Image (cartoon, rainbow, N blue to C red; front, side):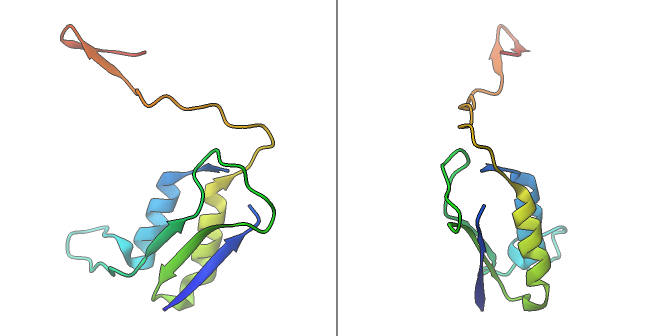
Length: 104
């Protein structure tokens, strides 16, 4: 198995990464689909971390070597970059109180 690197590029589209990992063999679309336990994406940075040109942000692990350029491009599109630091995201998505959901 080869490990390929994406360089020079941080926000993150986790859904796009997840579907790319599935296509690489790391997950299933249907319960009958096989899973390659060696396939996946290793992220070297967290969203909001500062990055420098040339830093490796992700490593792709797959046996589907013929599709590596497409996987690499899909992962690269999942990243977004900004010069300004990202605002911290709230970990609280919603609140349940008094028998109902209240948007916070």
